[in-house]
Image (cartoon, rainbow, N blue to C red; front, side, top):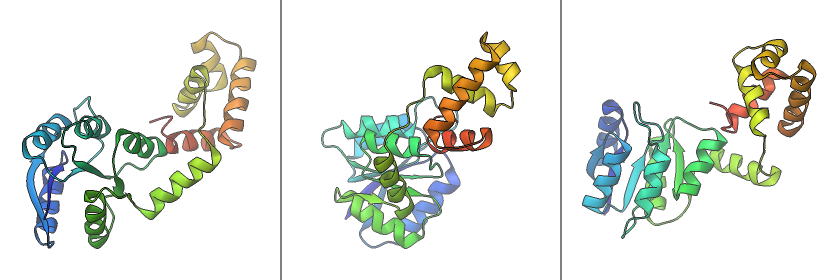
Length: 207
């Protein structure tokens, strides 16, 4: 029997998952948590085999990845399977580095979720195919390292600022802004401001 804790800030989502998992053979929901802190407390109290964890909780400074790290530090340490709507590479890598055994998106078919729960509870990797593909591409390409100033310039580009406005706000010349953007484009392997912002959000560099 796989006993687990549901951690999600949406009551309707938790109710749906409880109904789905209640009908699955060999799976039992021990408790629910609406915040990362509640998830850690429930894991400590109930010692489940698995915590099914969302990544973002409304109104909470702590994230699902933060809670995952704390849960994996418990003894005994439950496995954690992330189930979320967030799929940037920054989110994925953050969760895996925190100790999550698997990562699924909430649009996964029910049978895929049940299968992932069984794999993760056994300590095996349970990554959605699209997520696994992204991680492989990231490993092949290596990490993208933007400087703090390059990120600041790109953040202002995302806000719709012109080069002139960025230069004035950061007290640098427009030529320096253009130079930063050339470096950003090269590092992200893109050729436009729009593509740079999109790629940075995909990688979790920008929100």
